[in-house]
Image 1 (cartoon, one colour):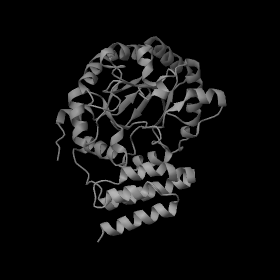
Image 2 (cartoon, helix red, strand yellow):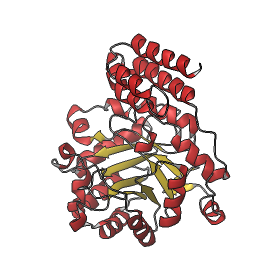
Image 3 (cartoon, helix red, strand yellow):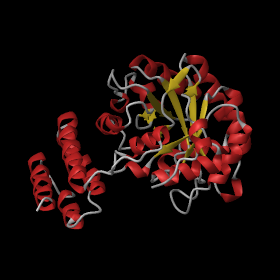
Image 4 (cartoon, helix red, strand yellow):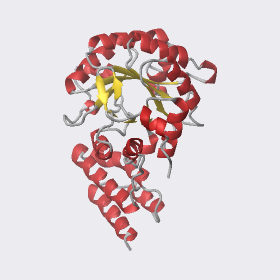
Length: 336
């Protein structure tokens, strides 16, 4: 069992202050495209009720031309605190989308300046803004002036190893009005390869007066503690570690608050969670939810006898009943 250093517990004992918003948790759930919909967030929040959640990133361009909310901006009135993440490179589009997000109930607006995916960067969004710091600065200023809630930024170290400019970039974001910075410790060129370079997060934290959240390779309580000690960050954000494991944010949050480790879920409990996730996606999205559920089901299928076979079967389900029958059979096998 890891130990929680007293000085770390003391440092993180107060609420996380994001501008005017206080969050009673130093562990955040990352926005993940195609993942962090309302159904997924409900599961994560069950175990981490006080943590900040994020919607999937929303294209401000689509909102501008369609003049209506994107489906992925839909939030439960009871899910607080919640931030809606936006992306684009046009300050006016982003300001308009931010205003609609606040009307929907967002407690904060996050601007994505870190997504490495080509279809995002080639249109000037995501991590391409690391190469356009003046545009990024205007975006933050414009959005901050358009809404009364805090505006935050999620970004990376730079475009590539030869273009690491996060120290200057982060300072400009703070001066432009960002109330918090979440930093993924990789460059755009790295994607999700190699290790996150937490030492850069520590350098940024020393420079800024706003909260800095560490992101990248937070797959366990041990990793979270090590990262927080190394960087001096104000909190951690969990991303890929929550895929098929919506317990992670709550496990880390509980440990940082108490110094105690929750009993990890058993294979049966994880399969029960997968079953609930599948059912909820069907109820929320219908047939499309079943197809989206396939990847989630695959993520749940690890760490128990027969996981590989079950993964392959769940990846081909066409109906809710097929999925439920397969999971029920797997649960029965675990209980033998």
